[in-house]
Length: 122
Image (cartoon, rainbow, N blue to C red; front, side, top):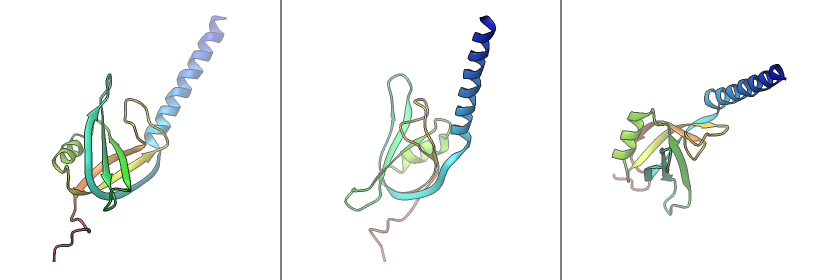
């Protein structure tokens, strides 16, 4: 009976490890989005995650929600600095997320400040 229990526990552990590895290492998609950075905050009760939003339209009708992994210190500092500015985000979309990573499946890997196409200064 003990041997069967150990085999079942080992199988569950291996499955969980493979699932976590798949979610972490295999992206669903990668891309860029641009818009006005309207929100960036560190939220959560027990585990804090970095969450933000950009508005991709003039009226704010298209909102893109994203998360940032806590290890991306440079990206976090830039997002804090660029609050209210027009930015271009490079992201990785994952198949799923874990509560300790963030609320969304979109994780920002790079950010750059851009000129807004809505206010063309010529």
